Amino acid sequence: AQTVTQSQPEMSVQEAETVTLSCTYDTSESNYYLFWYKQPPSRQMILVIRQEAYKQQNATENRFSVNFQKAAKSFSLKISDSQLGDTAMYFCAFRGGGADGLTFGKGTHLIIQP
Amino acid sequence: NAGVTQTPKFQVLKTGQSMTLQCAQDMNHEYMSWYRQDPGMGLRLIHYSVGAGITDQGEVPNGYNVSRSTTEDFPLRLLSAAPSQTSVYFCASSLTPDLYNEQFFGPGTRLTVL
Image (tube, rainbow over the protein chains, first blue to last red):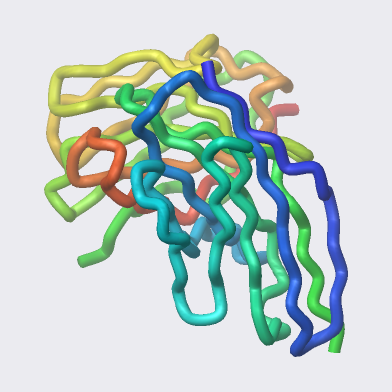
């Protein structure tokens, strides 16, 4: 079974700063996807970015990018030019080859201070 | 498209009562799943379905039943509610069970069992 670990329960940065959220995972599978989900106070789960394990190039979506280190089983999320609307819980998630859905980390509460 | 819809948004039950959480999607998705989210935890998979008539257990299935009689609907039943089932419940769907497909989440149901 795979596990996903987020070691930072809470982080706080000033608006416009860059922040990096950490995620490590453990799996014996070779083909999988990794995801970052954002959960604002509305509790809606929003996909931020995803990375295929076979792709060496790190995924980027506007201000959001990842640092995927497959050998180290690390998948961090970098948010550049942080905005007040980025305040939310962020969950790292793993999906492997089975049909049994996503495995989530415990989340990081990110607070952007004005 | 309404996407993934869940009803009700909030529910309070007494121990021993039964109820059904409704989930529907209008995207013709084959794959549907239920997760629960507890404080300080990520989402955990309860049950999932890869198509009409096919369901399987996830990580935390005890106390819950599901059925999938149509592609659109995937209800979650609590036969005898317990305080340990107090949680926020999310339904999610994706086009197919394949790992690369994005999962779309409903808005969640907050359930309190007294």
